[in-house]
Image (cartoon, rainbow, N blue to C red; front, side):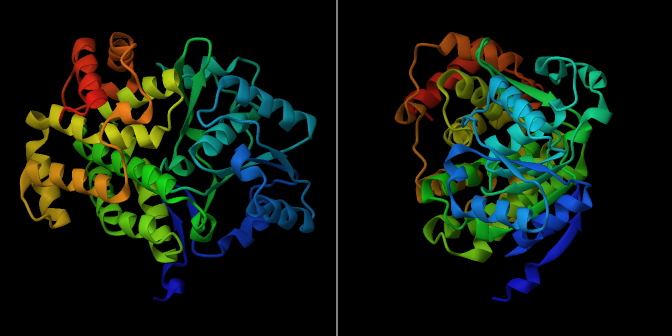
Amino acid sequence: MDLNHYRMNWNYPTAIRVGAGRIVELPAACRELGMRAPLLVTDPGLAGLSMIDHALLQCRDDGLKAGLFSAIKGNPTGQNVMDGVAAFKDGGHDGVIAFGGGSALDAGKAIALMAGQDRPLWDFEDIGDNYLRVNVAGMAPVVAVPTTAGTGSEVGRASVITDEVAHIKRIIFHARMLPALVILDPQLTLGLPAKITAATGMDALSHSLEAYCSPLFHPMAEGIALEGMRLVQQYLPRAVAKGADVEARLQMLVASSMGATAFQRGLGAMHALAHPLGALYDAHHGLLNAVLMPYVLQANKASIEAQMEKLARYLGLKKPGFAGVLDWVLELRSEVGIPHSLGEIGIDDRRIEQVGKMAEVDPSAGTNPTTFTAAQYSQLFEKALRGEL
């Protein structure tokens, strides 16, 4: 295997530097965007690791006044973002390095947005034309460095932030939130535990799968989604079974970015349920999508059978059509160690009605192939809770 074959510069949907070892280009990337004093935003689990120390040292050796902010939760909150903005201002920073998994990337992008705004964070929630309220001149540039292959937030124009007062996840959006430069370096993902590799990889699959099933007309996104799913099929089991497989790690980073690019076409009921469940139970987003996946597919069956015929052929599945895709999803979940029910990951039945109501109005519900009522979302949640497929 010649890893130099995978060393490329892409410009879709933003500038992306792909390849093992390319984290050495971080200081140059910051300078390219005009940064002289970047704030590296990461999560507490990564903050103490050598990769963060090394990244900061690289920047400082290059003459950059690099700072560190890591006070964020697994599901970042509005308070986390505003604490990051305070650190940005106190340190005299002029840009953000969003470094880590989805939580760090989302928080970093939101901090860069809010660094120069006078309005509160929730004024920029993705509702109507709220994005027009943003003072674009006040936004700071972002270099994104993902260390997990799941959310694809490095190529997204939004951040999912938890409103702890309302107990709801809100999507903060502006087109300029798309990081100006991304570094996809698989070596940064080699230490990721198998369980997190599996959950984040299934999250990448959920993005491509839901985008593929969306009823909106967007053939480019549909094509990207198909290939993103094929990459997950081929490389996720390898990445989970052998964490030091650099090629598998790189291909999963690519699949993750592809999933987030594809979901410009929309998401669906997996995310409509995962968002309230994440906000109410502080559960891992990727794991929620992974568990919910077959139940949502089954609920959408009547609306997606034609798409599943094509997907089964594209993936070369043993069994054709919807049944083949469902079997593949169940087998893949089992192979990479995903639990079968929400009950197995600590979700209880005390909020069945509330979750249904929240899912019905979640933005992701708008592009689900089937329109579900709150009661139908509650029923779907209860099936996933009890493992009744």
